[in-house]
Length: 388
Image (tube, one colour):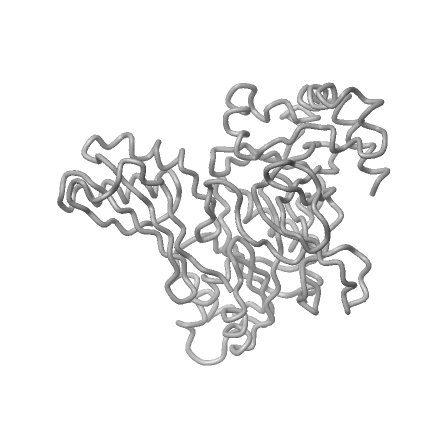
C-alpha cells in the first residue's frame, strides 16, 4: 500500500495540474516522499469540488487522461462530475458482492439510479464481472419493479435498504431475494433484523461517487473491510491531524488510480478504525461504520442534499419567502419535509415540490407556514434522525 501510495502521488504530480499544485503546496516531491509526507498535502474538500470544477472543468484538473479515453462522465448532486474509466469493474464492487454471497448466474434486481449518477452503473459492471444477469430497475417505478420481482424471481437485490423493505412489505408470499447488497443509507440493526426475518442475507458497503468502493462487510458483518482501492486516513475534522484507532474522525481518501488520482479527498463522512482482528480471517483493516457527516450536507434516501442546491432550486420561486428542509425518519424510511413561508395554497406547494424534485432528485412533502414561523437565521436543512 505504501508503494502504491508513493506511485499515485508521483503520477498525480506528473500527469495532473491539480496534483502538481497539491504537491508543490506540500513542499515539493522530496518533502512529500518522506515519512509523513502525505499529511503535508492540503485537504481537497469534496464540498469544494463543485466550485473547483466550475472554474477548471470538467474535473478541476485531477484527470490524468483526456476525456476521450473515458467510458462515461456522471454528474452527481452538487453538481460534481465523476469520470469512469474503461477497465472491467472500474468501481471495484465485484469482491464486495462476492463476499455478500452473490454468485455467477444469480439474477439480480439493481434499483440504484442509472441516470446521471453512477451508482447503477457501478453495480451493473460488478455484476457483469461476476457473471450475474441484471434487471436494471433504477429508481422509482415501485409497481413495475414488484411485478418484475414476482415474475422473474431474482435471487439478488442491489439498492438502498429502505427500498428493499418497501418491496418486501408488498410482496405476497415468500420473497425471491436471498442476498442483498445495500448502500446509500444507514442500515440500522433493527432494519437488518427485519430484512433477515424475511430470509434475505443483507450486506452493506461504503462508497463514494468519486472513486467507488471504499470498504465492505464480510460474512461476519462486523465492520467494513478496507477494499484497498484508496489510501484511507481518519483525521480530526478541524485540525486535519490523524486520530487514534477507535476514535471517530473524517474519512480522507487518496484514490490509487491512474485515471483520477485524487489526493487527500476529505469526504465529509465520519468513521473510525476498528483495531480488533476480524473473526473472518481477512487481514485487511476495518472501519467501524459510517457514523455521520461533517458540515452541512445530509444524505437522504441515498442522495446527498446540499444547502446550495436547495437555494438554487427555490430561488426560482419568488412566492417563497423563507424555507427549511427537515429530514426525519418514519419506520425504516427517510422523510423529507419542506417547511415554507410564502403565498399559501396548493400551487405554491406543488411548485416547491416540483423544483426540489427537479434540482435535488428528492421528493419532499411541503408544509406551508404563516409568515414569521421560521427565524431569519433558520438553517436550510435540519436532520432530526437519530440512529442506533
